[in-house]
Image (cartoon, rainbow, N blue to C red):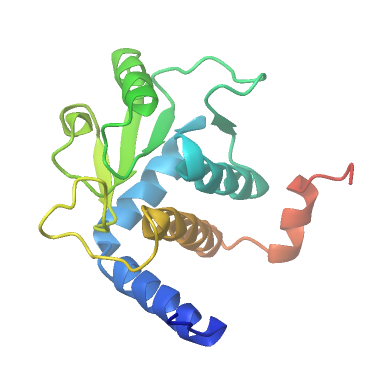
Length: 188
């Protein structure tokens, strides 16, 4: 049995994350920040582990005072043409997010796809794609391969991208970090 230590595996994960995040375009991420800060409301949609990463991003942006919602939540308001939908899908072919993106596009909202596959069906309806070029179920030629199972690298990169975007917004708006606690849940 080939056993490896925690530190050896940690180094693999951190190295893969560093490689993935370094392949994301600075310009595209700034465009994402601009889309978020100019929208009236920001909606998120994704499934599985991608959903969990997006929910974390949604919550963090809410801490910044941004009106955020996750598609399907019980208090989800109506989406309008003043709003933004952020779709998380590595492959860009996941049925539910794809259908929601089409509906949002039809309603006139701006749509951003954060994913790996630039040639997905989403490409024809999105206003912006933020590409994290990591391994998907399609194993595209230019994807960054991973030793981790399935699409772990995408979900991890997505979560960290969200925290980087939040930090960019904080710096852009010169937000006092102590003031963010006013938006934090207090029924805990």
